[in-house]
Length: 420
Image 1 (cartoon, one colour):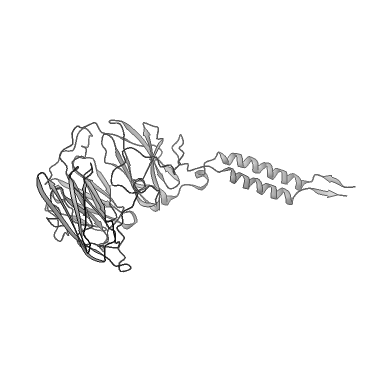
Image 2 (spheres, helix red, strand yellow; image 1 turned 135 degrees about the horizontal axis):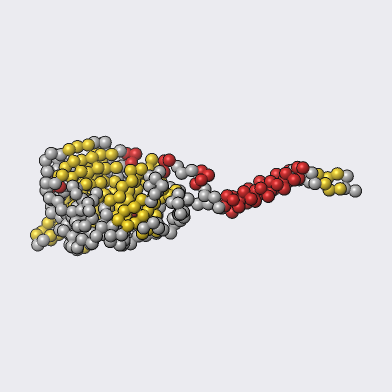
């Protein structure tokens, strides 16, 4: 006759199962971040709040590691809404970047907003406190349109995509913009707010000093000190270089000609003489809002299209068919203030496999129009805490089952002893 006897190993096995259950319950409610810690490479650096208006502001930063970025914001001390990087909103998907820029829109005038920065799997505050800013007062009708624009390139003259360009006018809120795939950037000057946020900034459109700094993350930085009169365009900004322009005119050797910078009718991309590695390049530019323009591509086959410039003074045209390798010309014509204006640029389409230049292809889901209100990306779920400490998520029931499984294995090997 066998007699079943509970031994010390059996008790150990039972305790392992119970201990696993208790540990699982405790860990289910314990933030994952407190176990693994936030990654220093994902920690936001050089955080800037710019482009403050009565209905919006912009938050930008850089990270050592290419990662996703977003902002969790709300009125006063309640950041509950989430909005992703501007590029994510344009493309309709989450991307990883070294530079990050988030435009927060559809806000209330003269209202304090708080926010945290989401980077990778964690949320970050400002040294234990929420980041905060206040929107401007309603300032009435904006002054006549005035923009600064240019291009950021590497030392080898390759265009730099995704660099943050900061522009500072005396007595005005700093303005910022991201560079496009062509390296081009555009910053409206007329709508910049005064530093006290009560009105539009007052400045001399020709003589005031302008400081431009470029932050391209791991690619480097650059700076230019110039005048407002030399910002249409700013001569190419090369990463790693700092220059101080004493004269209010484009620097010698600029690839922009007077014809290309005709008043308020501009081709931003492609650059003059640029070599592009796509047979369907995207043509972009600026013109007075609501203006009707005609774009003509002169190639073996001529392409032509008439379109209306959007409310932000921006236009874009994607070539509908493949262009043959070789030189092509784009001509844009319009009537501006009753005067016929024409701008023209030539560019080269590289044969397949010839160039390492980045392709200038229009993203089908992309849009140059700003999103009318903050967009919460459904794929992003970032819970917040009362303290503002990053909490990307908790341990799941699956991990608890694994812990229980380990306990059962221990129990199985240390189980019942039998005596006869």
